[in-house]
Length: 228
Image 1: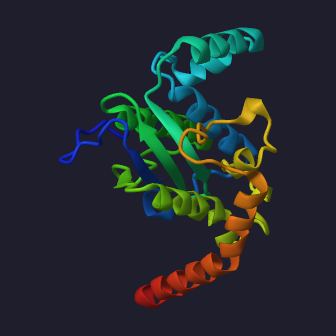
Image 2 (image 1 turned 120 degrees about the vertical axis):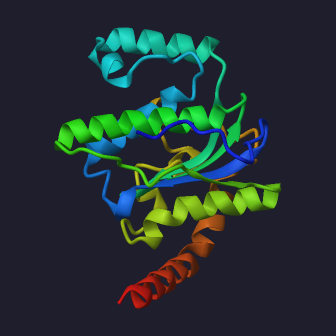
């Protein structure tokens, strides 16, 4: 279990951070569409301060009740965080997020990581921790850094050669930025941070695609050289 730990340098409310969490020992924690979808749903709902359900119990409710609860909470509940951008990868998760309430990021990350670990261990009949300790964080210092960070996050699937183009990866916020994702599938609040013109943003991302892939390949070779 990932305990909610109070950090030596507390995360500051109304600041934006790059947040990432890796699986233990590079273990693949998302094996299929069901696994990815489970985490995506949790990201959407655990942002809400008043969503207090254990996720497995929430899913036992009938669909109409789930929709009613969800719609009501999105209309009434305060948020722990705002997700600006995110991407689920086979062995790790990337976020850009704004902390709304005190310890909001820690509470949110604790909820999604612990809930998913319980689901994963039960489904795949395993024991032990799933995530490599506490999540990592880096303060985003300005708008330019934020914009480039969203691009880096959205290019992760192509850099890892999971898909040819970033819009082909269903488990990131990139399609939200391009305005081609269904409202039901959205998890981000990015328009208050970044003014996105879809065709311009797509060009901004694609202009970096090949270069980022090369950097990723060089990094991987360096890791292999160090471990061989």
